[in-house]
Length: 204
Ligand SMILES: O=C(O)CCC(=O)C(=O)O
Ligand SMILES: [Mn+2]
Image 1: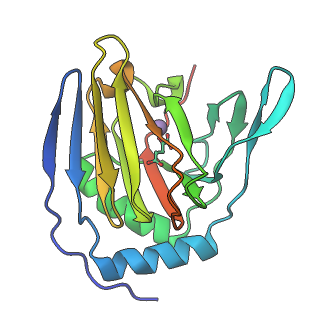
Image 2: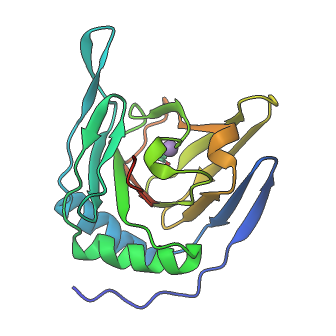
């Protein structure tokens, strides 16, 4: 399917201590965002992964998928994930966000929140494969969700709503000072897909 050409996106810096955030609320226009949402729901190999906690398996409260260049395997929560091969839609989005972020991403983690009960707890994207001061480009399709930050030393907080078709770039020292989360909500919410484009480096 041929997708319409992109509008020139406009973004703004969100000033934060110890990190940099850039937010593009309408990175994709509504028509393009609707198409990607539909195509990714259908074509991505969504799975409910899990981890061991105190010797017991627990499932993550969301669906996930991992795509990337060969060799960009990624370990988190005690498990190593091998990337699936890029599909056309993810490559196209990658080209577009890479040109804006000024970094060529080699992988993308996808998370699908089926309703308000799906979530992601407090964490930083600070795995060794991401290196120092990683640039991470986070793309959002579907329902708007709260995205919260907390500074690990200074007691600061920040939050924003990540809307359909938006792009949030996290960079600078952000991942070394701040954690982030997508909290559960009792509100009846539709599905949401989040894509975080990353540069995975070989860990020696
Ligand atoms: O769903 C989101 O907005 C955040 C996802 C996230 O933090 C991650 O994949 O590490
Ligand atoms: Mn994260």
